[in-house]
Image (cartoon, rainbow, N blue to C red; front, side, top):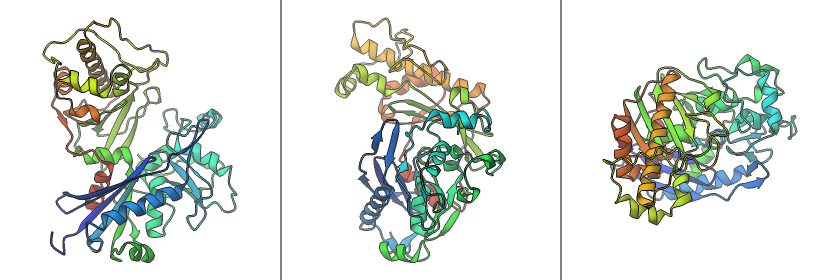
Length: 430
């Protein structure tokens, strides 16, 4: 790397940890640093975290990163955060109380109130939506000092620039922003929120401003370093895979099964928990099933799963026709809160049972993409796979046979890398 090689930084802020990745102009990862965060404070259905812990984590990962790469060569930085994690601050960006995290659930009365105003398929109609949490926060702080309603990524961007009150379109969707028309909707005018508190909304990759003087000195960055708008962690992870053309899809085989496909227009379906996020001129349409790796771990240890994987026979389907769920209830691709897991009959051989579970999850994946297609999304042309299940070759063969389209393991799925790509390609505004 020559002294003049520009660098691009992505910061991924979660609720359990923080990661930062540096890449060069070729999108090659040069170094990644990570650190843990203190656990959230749990109180009933509430999930609370001190935003100062986020900033301390960012400082740690950047300090480690800049021991390995030259901070003076950093051209742009982008930050992603968990969707729906929010806080309120004063005009100086100082938090007025703890942040409410993505998995925090407020009283359903807030949702009932919003149902009389918001369109029926709007993602704010959930007890863990960003708007519901901001309504609660605004009622539990001194309104005379409240100046900004922010998301997790917004606040870190503000710390780096001293410019608060700026967000990105993806983070704002669950707060009520109309991404299709790029505006805060008129129905929000009747809420007990001052419009001045809501952030100015930019596209991911759009310049927020230069790094502040004191932050440039703090990290030995050039005063010309630009901070650009980031996105949500899930969208950053999608960008990291390299998917982005219409018909590209990403399946996340984690504890749950998450499906996303790139389409030409937004699709909203509260019935199936489907909502859309802009991806440049296209849209990212997705849904999530309760099925996934959590079901496997109810029956087998990681060591057992690893040992049995070599004994799977994808060419010989079991015919067990399972619908694996960890507990009753499913929303996507079937909407039935009382749907029972279908895991009978259980064969004597554990390997056969394991393969039947994998086939069942693969069948749900197929039904999920068919459901998205019924709602108007394109059926995938190719599927990139992320999550722990992506390394199981036998499972990949089962899925490819069932889906009859190319199924590949994504080369990178780290959200910090996706944010670094946003910084690199900010001129294109992903």
